[in-house]
Image 1: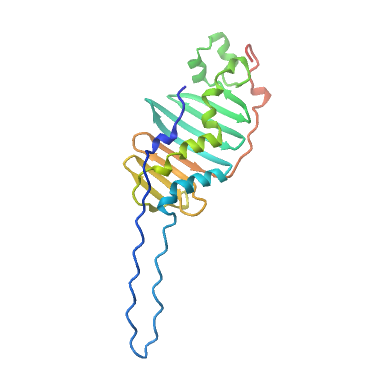
Image 2 (image 1 turned 180 degrees about the vertical axis):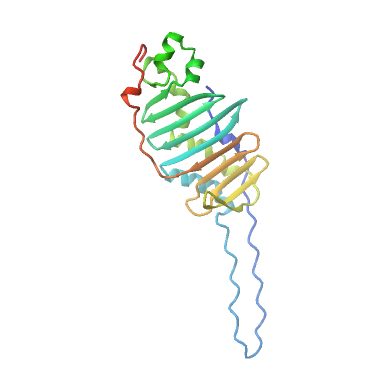
Length: 242
């Protein structure tokens, strides 16, 4: 299975924001007239242009979890992700060209549910298909060996976020535009290659990445880890190769 590279949604370059305009000097007040309070200087941008990439990366480093959901195209394939990533665990579903794989990670141990599409893709004999369909298989099981390698890159919080945000520090975007994303004040930076929506206030979490050719990914629930547990014993595959 191809490794995901979400950072490819954004190309290399540098961020830029339009500088604030100066404030005009108020005209002298007429004699005997109270002097009006001087005009206040416009507030600086919520996120300085030169620090956007670093700020987004630092926010992710300080967090311990994120929810990732969206669709992307890669190497002729369509990939859908719906994942909860914690520092030490993960859960969710990966769908690649119709091949659906529910996944769970706890530390270095991985679990994969054999859906009908996975059973078909794996070429499981009909005699064994009924036994394994709908069952979870551990990466330590003989039948699950090798599968974990295909998921390690994007079921690990640190690897996933670093790969996704890695190129933001040098991406060429137009000036940030004020926006609201899922109720959060944000700034949207656009380029010919796509857009990145970032939380306006600190910490400057990445909220959305979109590419007109490759799809869009949503990022939410930053620093809100959830409990991930091993599948119940009754749902684990116990046949040959378990």
